[in-house]
Figure 1 (tube, one colour):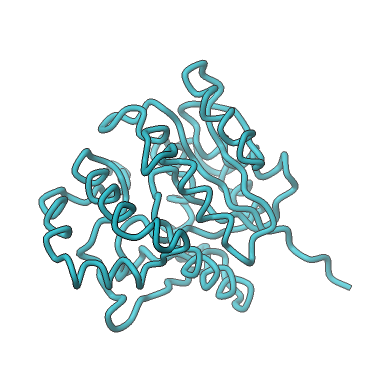
Figure 2 (cartoon, one colour; figure 1 turned 120 degrees about the vertical axis):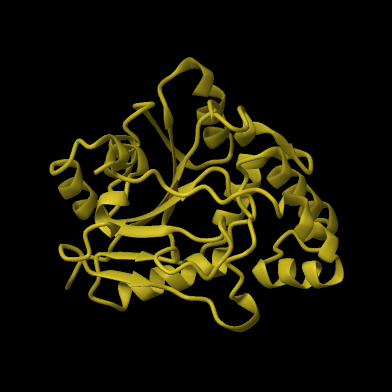
Length: 252
């Protein structure tokens, strides 16, 4: 009988964000923003474990402490080589399938991630994402690949963008890896929205979302957010002028 794959969600998080320092522990509706994200990831039905991948720098010890307080795994490693940090976090907890997330996504959607996991398990692919053709807002989804694939990448490239952006090498090499992009349809197709926290305007929007939705329904999902935006179109304008940040590319 084939061994069941251990599915682990990894969260990359540290205090030294350049655009909004300390954002992962910034209070969001009474708890650190990262704690709110972990709350949501605990509702992903297909995952076996959640592991925080933070750095071994002293300023990031409170981030590791939060992981322990919330009963999830954690690994502290390189501040620059994020690929190595995520790979070692996965190996520490014997994870077979990595569900990669970043700690600045406090309204990440558990249902979307479950659909991504099922798509990966039901397909003969090496990578599943929602960003190859962007149809969802930034901040809702994850990137999926096996620990074996990431280890192969780690042994292949030392290019700084690859090491900083973890799965960049995989989806930049479709001739080498089979890629699957999950696309949203109908009212859910909103690539114009930003639900990730990079700037103060982003945090302001997320704060308003929690204020409007959380107390009535702590398990609010992407559909509830879209319903809120229909009632309160003014909220979308809060970070409308913020430019989406693209993953660092390779210099030719």
